[in-house]
Structures are given as structure tokens and as C-alpha cells.
Length: 423
Image 1 (cartoon, one colour):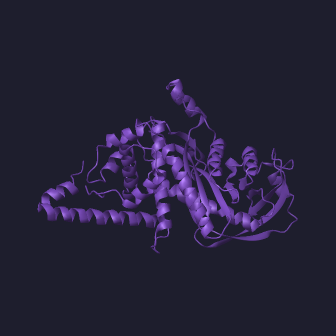
Image 2: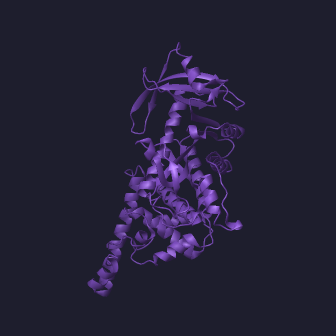
Image 3: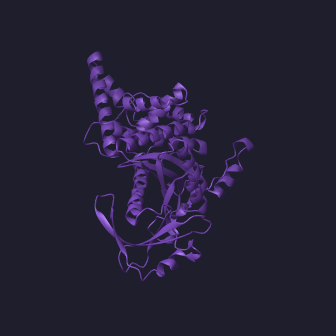
């Protein structure tokens, strides 16, 4: 099998050193190797497969023990990484002369094989984005929340946090000692914890707008956001009450009013026109006015979409154009699951899985950090950063093999070391 990595990537090591992680030297070495190998292989990212990418590496059980039994937590990586990504985002905001920071929240599902039973973070979940029949929307996998922060035209992943359902927590706690028991945290509460981590890192003079879908549009979260002096733009379910009346019924009562055409730039650079009506009122248990937008794709659209904005000064164009940047969360989810193997873990305990997720987040943050630092005009997205990373390893691997051949004169011995037989 062809190996790919002779030495750890220097730029990745530079980023990790700047984080000053509270890890021992062996733990840090294993974390760097896992993050490095995640970027160079397209195969399923099992620990055995990651180990095969190295010319010289320890047994995969040593890497597994770093995740399973080593005395460190995912917060040892996640917390310094949050600080770095927020610092990079604020610097980018200052460079572009802007004063608005967007915080996007979303959840997703890393699907596992239906036969997977013993991995603690894996359970059955309803996948509302699944396009097939309703009975097939129950998927086995790990659910997680992702937070994305946007400064101008650049987006950075701030947090990736696994989520455990209440029944899953109860089931796992039956087999745990009192000191090891897990605590259930609902999705809105988990989103609030992520926002709290953002709050302590954001200067008071920076304007913040939080954006999320209807699953998080609770009165508690909206009140929390306004208490911080921030604003929110979110999607609403049609049965939410606005000034005592369902939002969809209030929308029908506006049929006599003209639509406002709003042109929104989407991810591929094209523009789409939506027909929008606005109305103002108070949502149930929300002690301040909000602007609700009723959006249709065309005049005969029977299923309008409803949005709420706590900033009454925003025009429909500004609110919806900003909300369109939530697409960055979908881009993050694609890289996390398809390119970096967030759902490819094989470790059993929740704590080990949480550590693996933190290392995957480290790999994605490295790609985004590298895009900011690069001078290559061709590097425009994370896929270009992955290509550069692999090219550097290929050059280093070939140079190392040639140098060893020149030094030893034994081609067969070098081939045996650099091209070990497939296991």
C-alpha cells in the first residue's frame, strides 16, 4: 500500500503550537498525526486507515488509547480553537471595514450503518432533511450542532458539538458510575452554551446577528439573544402565534397588500427573486416586537416560508440576504462528513467520540486558517487547501525516499519501508 506521510505537515504543527494545548507530548503527537492523516486520505477514516498513511507510526491501538483512556477532554482542543477562530474572524472583520458579525447555528446527522449498536453517541434520529419516504427518515447516526461565524465574505467554523437525546443519556447512565454519568442538554440549551462561548470572546462594540432555523426559534433563546444586545433572524413555523394569531393566518389576512420583490444572491453567484410581505407584532412569550416576513417563490406558491427579525430597522432585502449566509453551515457539514470523516469513528465511549470530533474540527479549522494566510490566488476554498496540503506531503515523501536511496544505495530496502505490503 502506498504511504503518504513521512513527516507531519509544518503548517499544521505551527497552528497547533499557536494553540498552546494543555496536552502531554505523546498526546499532542497523536492529535497532530490524526488531524494530518484525516486530510490526506479519501478512504473511511478509521484509526487503522489513518495509521497506514504514515511511513513510520505507532500501532493504531496507541492512537485509540489517546482517545479512549488518556486523561484529557475535548475541551482541551475545543476551547483554544474557539478563541483562535474568533480572533481570526474579528481581524478579518476589521480588515474589511465592517462592524457586523454573523453567527449561524445548525444541526446535522452523521449517518452510520444501521447495524451499529455499541457506539455511545450513535442512536436513531429523525432526519427531517431526508428526501425519501417518511418511514425511511429514521436514521442511525450521531447528531451534532455546528456553529459558523461569518465576517464579510469569509466563514469560519466556531464549534462542533455532539448531541445526545434524553433517552440515550438515560440508557447510557444505567451502566455508568455516579461520577461518570452524563447530563442531558437539550438542543436549544446546547445552542445557548455555544452562544455563551461566543459572547465572552466578542468585544462590546461589535454588532452581532444570530441566525438559525425554526427548530431553535424558542422564546427563551430569542430573549437571551436580545439580553446580550444582539439581534436574531430566524425561520418560523407557521403555527407560531404573532400578537395572538397564527402566523399563517396573519399572512392570509395580508392578501390585499402588494408583494415586495427581493433579489437574493445565492451560493453559486446567481440571483433568485422572492415575493415578500412583512408584518410586525409580538411572538408568544417574547416581550418585544419582531418583524415577520412572509416569503413566496412565485405568486402561486401555496407553501410560503416565514422569517422573524428582532431588528425592526432591517429591510426584507438585508434580513434575507444575511440569512442566505447560513448556507456556510451546509458547506461545513459537507467537509466535516464527506472530506474529514466526522462519522467514521470506531471508538465506543462518548468521551472518546467527543475527542475525535474535536480533532476533526481542528483539521477543518486548519484549512480555514490556511486559506487566510496563503498568498496563492488559486486557493479559494477548503478543497484547494486540501490539495495544497497533499501536494506538500507528496513532495516531502518523494524527497525523503530519494535521499534515503542516495544515502544507502539499497533501493529495495527503501521501497520496502516506503511501500509496505497491504495488511
